[in-house]
Length: 196
Image: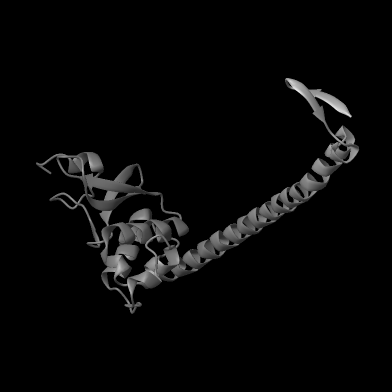
């Protein structure tokens, strides 16, 4: 058989020829396994994603329930926001028996681990996280506040708690409320004033 390919005639036998139909069958056979693997992999990824979502929701629910029960034991539910804040600071101040083990057992981001680890509660960020998590479990409106130096770097982490129409600044790591000379709680705006 003479075929004209390129610049000159080429001799090819019938066994060397692959019809376009045979080529398609070879491609389909080869890619069938690839498509089956892709289909299986995508289904597994969806299954794993759903399983992780369910696990995350269950962990979040159980953590919230634990914190609510824990907070109920140390914070008066019928008190004012100021009384609730003071009760929580008092609990932090008197540090009941807690784990003193290695820090790698409790993550500073794990709310349950933070309230159980005495060393993490001495760090301003972790103590603030514990205060916020426990406070929110009993209905306190809280927000994190960074105290900055003149260069704009973070020096300390405290918490603002809404007491009526004011946001009082609370320091969970020093277990105190920022107050002026008359005993009135200070806001972050008032903290900027050196005369206060």
